[in-house]
Length: 102
Image 1 (tube, rainbow, N blue to C red):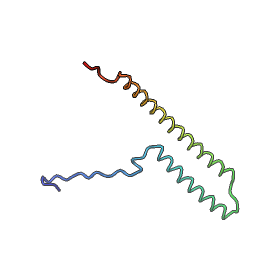
Image 2: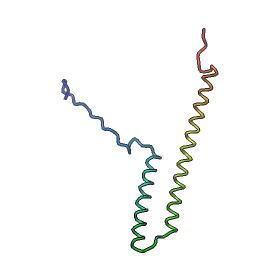
Image 3: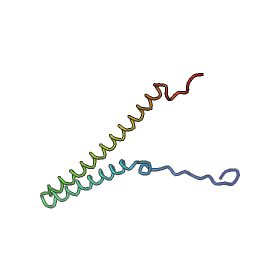
Image 4: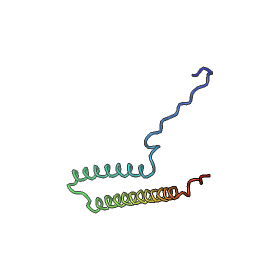
């Protein structure tokens, strides 16, 4: 309590999951899924002596495509941002962004 009797509000620190963007969350979920899938395929192999190769190829192929698409989206966003900054720099260097001297 403070001198005046008012309680201070404690700010909760945001966890990594709350701070992370959507792509980061998807990558974490994708990684966990692949880890669980790989462990389950090892268990299936130990029990049966073989694994469903088509299923494994399909799952890893789909996850690879998802990761590739997310990488392309991220790369494209960075290119657009870099282009925007470049145009702003050109505008400032040409004198359009600065006020005229009296």
